Structures are given as C-alpha cells and as structure tokens.
Image (cartoon, rainbow, N blue to C red):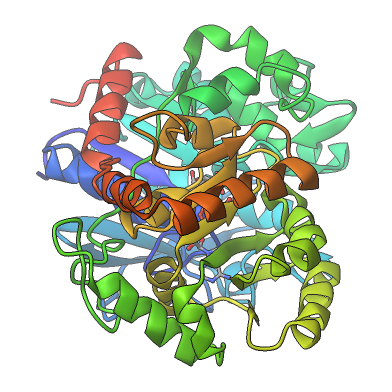
Length: 487
Ligand code: ADP
Ligand code: GLC
C-alpha cells in the first residue's frame, strides 16, 4: 500500500506491545481493520522500557531525528515492526519512555508527563515530515497525543506541504485531560496564538486534551451515547463548553471488539473452547476457574459473578465493595481482578477473609486470567459511573457472561436490557449500591428459576458482533467528510 496517502495513528498504548486498558485494545485492532479495508495505515507509539515485543522483531528505521525547540538538539530514534502487514513505529527516547510504568507510579503521575508527551507529539511530526508525503490523516488518541492536531493546525498555515493533512482527535476518556501549569505552555513550542479560552487555555492552566479538541478537524468519542453525554455538565468534566462549541464536528463511533483475541471459540488462554452452537465448554471453564482461584467446588452449581477492571471510581468498584456482604448472603461466588486504588484493593483483600472459598480477589494485571474469568463466570458486573465505551462488557457478551451494568455511555449502546425479549443483559439507571444489588438479584433469580430463558439470553449474548470492520467503515467515512484524500 506504500504510495497511497497515509493515515497515521498516534497513541500512547497499543496491544500487544503496551496496554493499561481499553485504549491499548483499540489501537491493537482499529488501525488493522482500516489496513484490511485497503487504507494505508500506520501507528506510532512510544518505545517503553516495559514494552512487550510479543514475538515481533523490531528494527531501527530512523535514528537521531532532531526534535527541535524547546529543547537543545534532542533526538529520537524510531524502530519498526510489521504487524500483520501494517507498519508499527516505536518512538524511542530512553529518558522519557524507558521507565517502570507508563504514566504514573503509586505516588502519582510522573512529574514530567507534559514534557514526555509533548516530546512524543513533536517527534511524531518530525518523523512524519521525513516521509515522502506528510500523512493524509493524523489520528490522535487521548491527552497524550492531543497536541499533535494543534501543532498541525498551525503548521499547515505555514508549510504548503502540510496543507492537505487532516486531523482527528479521539476521546477515550474525558476525565484524563493532561492539565498542567501555564508555564509549560509557554515553553512547549506551540504557537502562542493557541493561548485563549477556545484554545489550549483552561482556567489559567495548559490543557492538552482541550487543545486537541479545539484544533482537530474532527473530534470523536467511542460511543454515540457518550458523545451526547459529554455535552452536559454531568459528564463533560469541565470541557462541555468547548465540546458544545465544536459540536458540529463531534461524532460518536462505537468501538468494536477484537474477536481474533476475544473469542471463547479457540481462545489460547482457556482450558477448552465453546461457542453459541456448542456452549458446553463454558461449564468446564467455570470448573477450571474455580480450581485455579481456590474457590469452593460447591460454586460449580451456583452463579459465579465477576468484575475485571481498573479499581477506580469510574468503574464503581466502591459500589461492588459495598454490596459484597449482602451479595454473599445469596449463596453466590464473586471473582474480582483489578488494580488501581490502594484503599479499594485493601478493602477487598480484607473481605476475602470473611468469605473464604466464595470470594476471590486478584490484585494485579493479568491478560490471560482476564480471559479465563470472562469464560468461567455467569454474570459480569460493570457498575460504571460513566463509560465512554467499555470493552469488557462486549467481551463478556461474547464469552456468555451476562452483563449487569449501569445504563451509561457505551453500556447503553451495547447491552439490550432485560426484560426486552431480545435482552442480552441487565442495566440500572443510577450508579448506587441499592440499584446495583437489586439488578444483580434480578439476574440471579433468572439464572436460578428460569433456566431456559437464561440459556437463550446467553446464546443471544454470545451471538452479538461488534465488529471493528463496521467501526473502521465509520472512520473512513469521517476521514472523507473532513476532506482527507485517501487515494
Ligand atoms: P478502560 O479502558 O476504561 O479500563 P475497557 O472496558 O475499555 O475499560 O477496557 C479494559 C481493558 O483492560 C480490557 O481489555 C480488560 O480486560 C483489561 N483489564 C483491565 N484491568 C485488567 C486487569 N487487572 N488485568 C487484566 N486485564 C485488565
Ligand atoms: C477508555 C474508556 C473505555 C473505553 C476505552 C477504549 O479507557 O474508559 O470506556 O472502552 O477507553 O476506547
């Protein structure tokens, strides 16, 4: 596809090389879906110290790219690999990216995150300017790469080569904005004309995501419902003003699920395969999960509930912790996998003592266990306070773990709630403990008392297909609508 105009994705994570959450999953799948539709696509992402090469061979492709002002001549190197026929580039600068974590330690964010990701964006544009033609589209994701659309907006006024480049800013989570002291704006190298309330300035601070929203040709978020919600003060995280101003270019495009990675039919992490036509393997997966987590064998005939996710307020982990004692009275098993807030981690670990054999809590990050939990559980819990899209519920559907989730954002767009005859899960309106528990009880009742209805729901859930192919089609249309020339 070389020779065709390029769509260049800039992102701070990409599965299977790096991942802290759904952003990594999206980057592992969406660019490839575009590539498979014949779009010349590439990804540029940081070369982290903790990067996994995942068996791919990386080779140095450009060295000593000078990344100019505001630093004295600092350089970056770029490594490349072939990911299913699509180039992935890794931007290397040891002092910024060769660290133990991606963005923060348990003590908080890295103090130089603004400098690190500003460096990434500036180096990305230097890298792109060395290509035979600047990219047709630069597609940025979240605050870490949000300065790129802002830079391009000023660059194309000065450099005719860049005139045809279009930019897209995708918001995966509005709560993370990259907000820094104004001093860092004056030093970062962005045109000073960007310093105003419809630009990079936010209540006297430098706000990277706001800059991306202000200057990109199109702004997207990862579900239609979240695109509507973020225009309101309740979900706008303070950026509803600029989002309303940019409403004409704001679109919600639902994420997909990568069924090459997340499908119980042939999943390499599972003890056995299953699919809607042959669902029996799920029982075996449940049995095996119960053994793996040292839970009581008696749970094999009881509902097994699970939670996988960052232990943060967003995910409603506090609501789960709060209801566990009441939930346990229902003779169920609960499995939790996650990490994040130390207070919630500690509370859950304490609770294990009270419910030995019925509550398993794994604090940490384990890709393969996440698959086995999805496969082994009957009910998947997702009491999110907000959810831009959410991928775990889509995986749960495919794995036949019926979601019980808040009716927000992407959860509205992916779960058809009981008692709809075509229901694939259960939702509740307000993220509070009472509604959450009430709705779980409804699900447990159906599991126990109406087996045929339950089995039918599981089959419907497993047959849902949120394909990346469909999302990629929507992005291609968007690129066209903003005037990108892809041929
Ligand atoms: P978010 O991006 O907000 O964290 P998503 O549902 O979009 O939520 O994506 C979360 C992704 O991260 C899923 O692939 C999920 O399996 C994974 N994940 C989250 N926490 C863990 C964990 N502790 N161990 C393994 N995978 C996890
Ligand atoms: C964010 C959101 C999540 C979404 C993911 C991928 O992490 O919290 O809802 O699924 O990005 O877009």
